[in-house]
Length: 592
Image 1 (cartoon, rainbow, N blue to C red):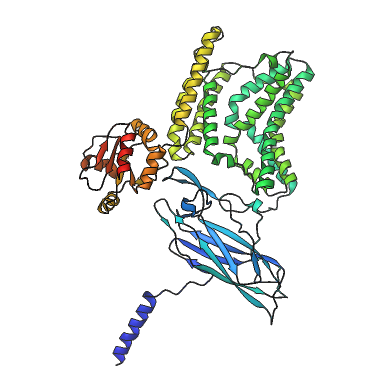
Image 2: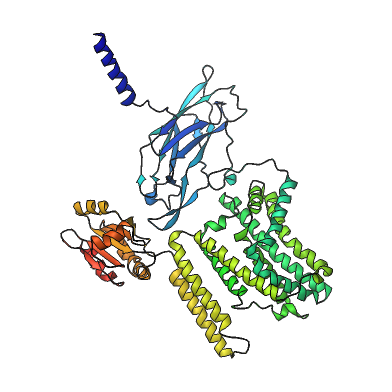
């Protein structure tokens, strides 16, 4: 009997341990991809007071929530819906600044929340009747939204996150568990800026040093010879004119930082967010534009074309155009410093965002003063101009070497672009370089005016046409392409589902034509979605990819591009090996 009892007891213990999992506490939701917990700002709150809950998310690696209903598929962005029976009134949730995530299926950058982040739920307490030491109010927090990775999405039923808020007339609301952040202080990567212990003077000094550092940025070097030339030419003029032109150049630098300060004010006052140094590089259009500008400046360094100083600037009789040229050159020098900014600049700018608007504006302008000061000193002390190294072959070689540095920086910027945009920007950069060569190398000072205009108009038309072709958003992004998977294709065919396979490769120029001429069409993309066609992108860029092996061994095709449409009821797929089959594909899709 004892032996049987021991066996039964053992089985009970096994099933108890292995067959059941102790339920998670009510204030924690835990799945295999996300853990969600709630924390109260105060252990208890007084009637009529204000407090908040902090809902903390911890996601598994490579998983995320969508932040915006406008970009989330089907509007499945994350939503928090707190509720209570009485006495507690919730305000709008405070979300952190979202991260940018490149969605391969759509070819777009979407706003997401990933890794660890916190959503704050501010609330106000009513005036309950308290019988005893305190009264408790049950809180339920509903959580909705799709949780996605690169290969799949889930819409879990999280249930309700629960907690209880204690309301007591003598509640000690002294040291909070967390500080409710102002929305203006939220910065990227879901971290929060806090008012640090730096003194104002130390921070302004840091901003000033950051501005000084901009003058040694490699991106600014191409215009330094022009700046020195301008200052030397100005020194030959009257003393007053020389100083005025130099100050106009400094004004151009300050104007750039005034624009940043103005943008910061607008964002904070009207949109409740902050301008972070580096935010501009989250815009693919800005990054591409800066990369292409550096390519053009590299062409200048290689003497493919020349930037001449207007006679109105160099001559004593210069007019207002000379001053505007100086302001423009200073503005350009400040813009060119942005791709190569040191971390000290980012630190100074981030500190400015945690301050009140007047101090933040002052800090941003101090950065501009730091950049402009060396030029102001140079124009105010003519003796320094005589010590400038004289122009010679060394300067030309130095400028050409800088051209290669600029190309390296341009490539670095292009690699920061979404993968689907890189190739187009690289192709356009080559065409742009050719057009710049046409502009500066095919004509000279003695070229007849008609021929000069003809050559340059052709260069402009070629550049615009290439930009229209290469720079827009990648073709085919309207279609939700799935990566090649033989098992997925077999499963779809077994379910009598149509399957469209696009065999392509990164090095295949004809494949890009197919994307633009066929798969970028809205009517075809709409039919693919409407008819429930499984769209497969079969990448054959390298020889060891599954799609490359199956292209030859399974489908007996010699190369790309080739598109196949598997239609239920047909033994063999429809195949297109040319680049212009859009109408034929549309006709078959309409019959499905």
